[in-house]
Image (cartoon, rainbow, N blue to C red; front, side, top):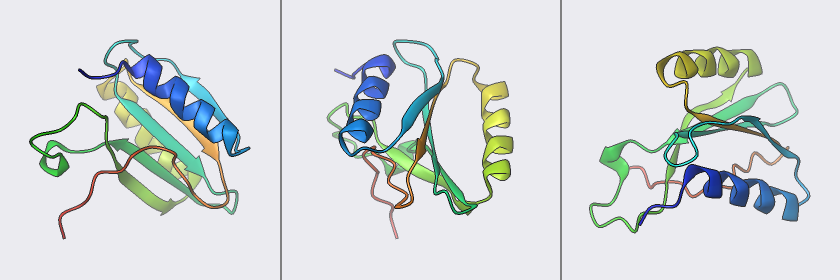
Length: 115
C-alpha cells in the first residue's frame, strides 16, 4: 500500500526539522496521490530539484515507498523556479517542499540510477 502524499510530505518536513534544517511546504497538492517535488536551496547561489523517480528506475517489486530522482542539480534558483512553473502547468495537484541546506540534503529516498 502506498503512503499518501500528505503523509510523505509531513514526514519529510519533520525529518528536516529533526536535523534543524528549515523546510517549508510551498504548495499543497492532492492529499492522496499528488506528485511531490523537493527544491533544495544550497544557500550558495545554487539549487537542486528532486521529483518522482521515473518508472524505469523503480524496482518491479517495489514496496510502495515513494522514490525520488534528481531533476536538476547545481542549477540557479531561478532555473529551478522556471522548471517548477512548467511542472505546475502540467500537474496543478503537485506538492512542493523547499529546503534550505548548505549540504544539499533532500531528506527523501532516492532511486538508484542505472549506470
